[in-house]
Image (cartoon, rainbow, N blue to C red; front, side, top):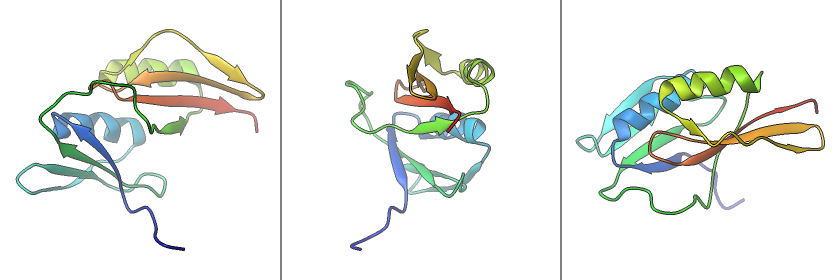
Length: 118
């Protein structure tokens, strides 16, 4: 092994706002802000730590990496995410025993929520 993933970092024009969105969605809170607000770190959620890095430019293209978040129920999760400021195009996909939806956080970063019987 060469190394371990320590953080998943998401670029953001407003890292405090994005950290609050993801923290509410994943059931964790902001644990640390460093470098005069350039980095915001969430507490561990399901064994992973998300951090948000302030950048000057808004998101401009499709994510090359995204998070897949398992939820208990798609409708309830979608409604909760929309209430937090996320967005969804209304499409749902199915593959084998999984159903999922691609949503966007308040800065337009795509992520999937899914349910699976497997």
